[in-house]
View 1 (tube, rainbow, N blue to C red):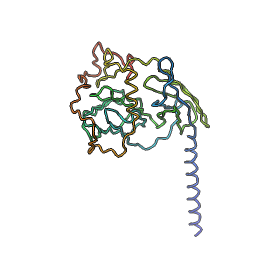
View 2: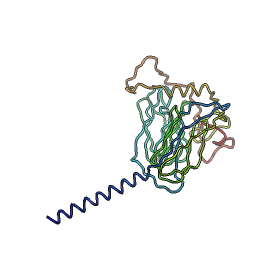
View 3: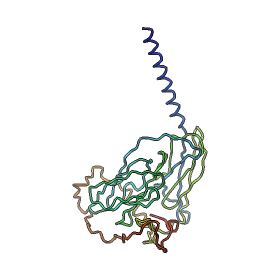
View 4: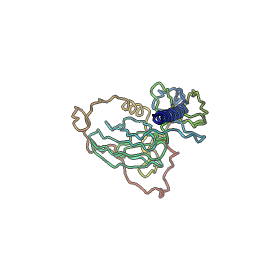
Length: 294
């Protein structure tokens, strides 16, 4: 009887110690960084600060906890990727669901996360697992103005701002971090020192140099000249379309709503898909730094 009592006491003590250690590990990541993002366009005019990807990466070798891998979904409807911005963790999978009555071709030539899902029709949803950190710019090889951006982090410490420009990233250990904020019109990066109690960092992005718009071909080659100039009015139209709320009950197979696009050929925007091997770039190919993507 005494032995059983002693055994029970030892188990309870071990449980309390383990629980305490777990709680300490969790509260050790009580630091955070939060603030407000401002985006300034041409002539330094303030813009709506939404769709800014804000992320932090440790610089002092901090080992941050990782969550279990997840599967996300990006839909394609009316020649638009939704959502247009997404943050994931290394090992996460993203599925691309075609809800249009035309084919799409999903690809990216991003270093470390290059992929090509090929052309697929309505109702299909191929996926890709991201293995390396970095910003992945994803396009459709058949429709020039289709784009979505996926920020891949080693650990899930990233977020996308809403229309108020506010952001917050939790679960940080104290120490130095690189804070990055990326918007389609500009970006900024700075080193911050996060204390146990967290901190506030407001961010300004200068988008006044936003001019050219193009994207690479599947090979990663950038053309010597922008393929088409995307006017600010075009960008606003695309963003407005991306912000429209879809019917949550939409059925990709049985949708027969009146007036819906049904252009199987869709030749008006199909571009030249001729490719070259990476590493054998033509002499007149431009560098990525010479252009700004959608």
